[in-house]
Image 1 (spheres, rainbow, N blue to C red):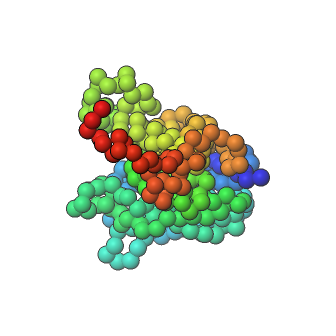
Image 2 (image 1 turned 180 degrees about the horizontal axis):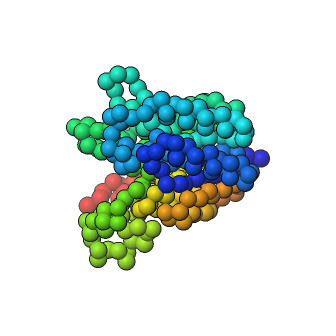
Image 3 (image 1 turned 120 degrees about the vertical axis):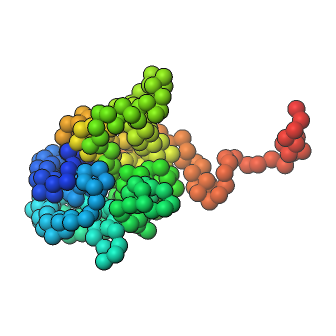
Length: 308
């Protein structure tokens, strides 16, 4: 049987590393009590998210972050649970840190780290994430109880090539950590105005914002197109633009938390379940560059595209 229980966790991520750490430990314990195999947390869950929760890494307390990280690893070992947690990874002098997810095994040891590859911002590197973080350069694949897992972070969702890369690597369960939260009510309203208030009725979402509309929709599509399960966690700091949720490999949402409210969503992932997959017969063909199904015909009327 290829089954694991995933705890998709959300809490109000902040600039206070100590408070974040206490939230993570509390929810790790709840996850373990619920029989979860792995506890999954948002982008920047331990460190906070630079540019949103705090302005920059100037005068950031890296020693405190390290102590809190080691404590979380010990707790994972005590509970015998996997931990997938967002944080910042310090680099050498003169380099911005990575925006990372650490993968910690039930012994409390780091088995890998994913660094956000597509950091938001323009090509100048002076806006968005790129003003505060260095992008990563690698996928991250590991196994939990025989199930191949992968990790992505927030803005990576805009690049479906990353999901295809993981699917080629045999990944069946994705941990996608987001931080689309800690936005003022005024900011949320301004984004809605930018979209166009007349379109609100046509875009049902947790919030009428770009992340509120496109992030959940993209996760549904990514799951269905690639036939992978996805744990989608987010900060619950008000205003959170959407609540954490879990998607089955056929694109069906299996559970959702409440927006702006801390919580732990436990989902049993069964990668051997007989789920609908309309693209199964042709997905590998597409991977190989054959962008059609069936056999092509050699017919002049097929080649002539300007006549009836």
